[in-house]
Length: 230
Ligand code: CA
Image 1 (cartoon, protein in one colour):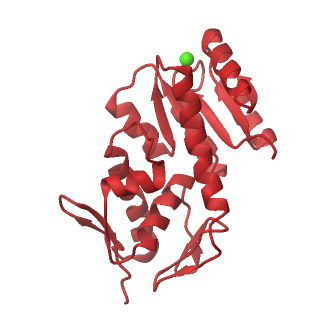
Image 2 (tube, protein in one colour; image 1 turned 30 degrees about the vertical axis):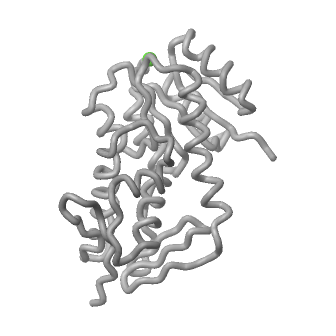
């Protein structure tokens, strides 16, 4: 199997070196750049499977790089931040990062996070070819496409997974923990706030496209996808 291609965007030499060493010894193909503009160029040329993106970069910061990447690609993004504040984490996730790691981090934890993110993609790739059909929405797990009112929905990779798991369980409540396990994996280290952020984004996009509230909040428990008929 071709090894996964990872683009590392980081300006600190010591972190570049350790990240490259650990990822290469885990079998990944690694390209390192140290600024935002180069990151955008390499992302176009390499079509990487995952981008590891530092927030504090000279010139163009990581949030802006992530936003630009998201305009053209659904590539997985793992953000690195020295700040690690809740506000940064939420802002990063809102912009479409799939995971967030605070410096200083252990290189082994970084490799574990990378494996977890890439595993999501493989699990999706072998999913049975089924279409999920609803009155306002069609979901194709194979092509990773969701269509609302005949228009493709613009979802990030993680948003798509959140929608797919909710839709597979239409009419049933999924708890935050269940969603966390289904989408982020049982070895996810973060807290379940990430679930609320993602469900909120998916719900808003569905509502913009269909005018319907298709994901209900079940207070104190979790979320439920509802197939609204009219
Ligand atoms: Ca930096």
